[in-house]
Structures are given as structure tokens and as C-alpha cells.
Image (tube, rainbow, N blue to C red; front, side, top):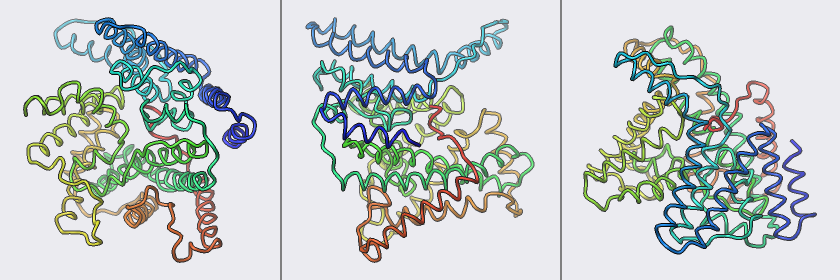
Length: 470
């Protein structure tokens, strides 16, 4: 509770020089991470120094071959660390299962490995810097303070958005001054993030956990509601963290890129992936899809590259076959969209002219249903559970009494209505100061009303952010 105001006060009123501010931000961020587990703060620092040193080495090396080997070494080291903590047991168990199918009796050790929170996020952020230095898109920085602040910046350290060195590092190297209007809007964005997390996502989580835990005894309608509620849980939960991270960063004079742009109003699957977890998709596009050839080498290789990106995206989310199936499913949908010419069809805000066309409504409905189906695999703990959930939902489609999820469904519906009304804004509480909000009292009634709602719902359930596990 005291961390943010203390860091904010010291940052602006004690550490006034840029270098001092960056060192303080880096130290505060490492401390923030160490509060979870101090041992893994050493891993965070190692990853940071590894990419920093690689950048300096790449600056000195002249031949392309040496630069390539240096960049590759840094990538391999960081990915091996990520693979060990996140995927060792998954690959060991999967390989053992394969050998058993072949008639062998393997005995691979299973390790009790604790997954460092946010390791996928900060690893990708550190790697983006060294890769961009290798490509000569950014110059290697000699300022360790600004680089430490860039990788460890605590608002987005554990769950993104994943920032690129081309956009965030220059902000760390430029003098910052306090902007009251920007900070005030950041506070409003944080407030709405807390509303989405505590009011919507956490209420959905209670209902979803109950439905998934007892799916064999529930009717198809209740299970369908559970799938819909998880769709709103993961959206409200992850976009809430992104709002909080963006708003918090603005308190320190830093602007982070948006991670969500009202994705459930997408009119096809291509538009959905331009609006959902945008920082991850930008990362994969720049460092996987385009290096593989993108869409430059013919249709077959383009489809191959799309599938590789989405399989890696699924694997990035977790060491489970359910994530790989979820990634393959979306990769297949994207390939179909490409073949049908739908992948780049929509780039404007839905209903931009004030009216929602029938084709847009149909596209939104179909896209949402397709996304909901995929979330069933994402939420399930195993492929067997996903298969059981789906088969039970389909085979028990009848009119049954919905016993849980009423409160969550109400909040989810309200979120859809509010998002639709505010879909042209960067965030919902980016007020235009019209109507009652032109008066100070009108704005404060809204703010206090939301705070009281948060406090009330805070006593009902408290859930960790979903993406902390990734």
C-alpha cells in the first residue's frame, strides 16, 4: 500500500537528476520484485546485465559473423534460463511419455521448480534490446542506470506490456518533468483498472472456478455460461493490469504502449489479434514472423510462419499441451482468415460512423464465439479436462437452472456496455468533461462511487492476476 506513494515522492522530490532517478527506479523495481522472492531478483539482475553487456560487445565487434555469434549466445543463454524454469518438467514428462509409447521405461527426474513471476515478460523485453542492437536499429547504451530502469521498471515488470528498447529506453534517457494532467489521467486509468480487476474479473473467477471444478455435474447451459464468464475474466483481469501499469507509469513521466484495444468488438480473428495482448504480438511479429520471411516467400511459407508464431505464443503462455492446442487453434483460424482475405479487412473502430452494420454485428458475434471456444482449452488444466468439459457441454444442452454466476454475468454485461460506449477512448475514464462531468462534483461523485464499489467487492473475493503465472 505504501510502496507506490513512497517511491513517487522520493522520485520527484529527492532524486531530481535523471541519473539518480533512473538508479532509484531500478533499485525500487528490484526491491519490488524481491518482495516476492529475493532469490529471483538475482536472476532478474543477471538477465539485465547479460543483455547490457551483449549490447556493448556488439558495438565493439565489426564482422557480421562475430556479431551474429554474440547475439545468438545471449539469446540462447536467456532462453535456456526461461526453458529451465518454465518448461523442464513439461519436456521431461512429454519425452518420457513418448518413450513409453515406444516400449521403453524411462525414469526422468521431476524437479520442484518455482516459476519466477513475470520471467517471460522481462526476458522478452531484455532480448528485444540486444536483437535491435544487433540489427543496428538502436545504439548500444553505456548508461547502465537507464538500461536497468528500462528492463526492471516495476509497473510493467511482472505482467507487461512488453516494451521495446526503441520506445521505452529513449524515455529513460530523457529528462522528465512532472505533468499534473498526465498524472491525473494516469490515476483515472489505474482506478478503472482496479474496477475491472476487483469488480469484474474476481467475481468471474469465483463462478468460473466453481463451474470448472464441477463441470461433470452441471448442465450444458451452465457450462456455456462458464466459458463466457472465463472470457470476461481473462479480459478484465489482464487488461486491468495493463491499465494499472500504464497509469502508474504516467505518474513517473513514462508512457507505455497500450496492450488492449477493446478486443471483443473485433469483427474477425485478424482484428482480434491486433487488439488483444498487442505487445506480445508485436514482439513475435518483429522477432519471429518477419525473420522467418513473413509473407514475402509465397503463400505456403506465410501459412507456415503464422502457425509457428501462434504455436510459440501458446507455448509462451505455459508448459501445457492445452496452451499449444490453443495456439494451434488460433493459428489455424488466422490461416483461414488469410486465405479468405479477412486478415486485414478491418482497421477502424467498429461502428465508427455511429451505426453498427449488420455485417459488423455478425462478424463480432462469430469472432467472439470462436474466441470463447479457444478459451476453454486455455482455462482447462489438461486436454482430458477440456475434452470432458466440451463433450459434457454439448451432450447436456438443455434448459437448466443457472445456479452460479449471476453476479459475474451482471458485471460482465455492464463492462460490455461501458466498453462499447467508450470504445473510441484510450481508456474508459478518459473523460471528455461533458454533461455532469464538466463539474468537479460530478467527477468526484463518479470517482468515490467507484472506490466504494471496489472496497465493497474487495471483501467478496481476492484473486491473483492471471498473467502473473506467465
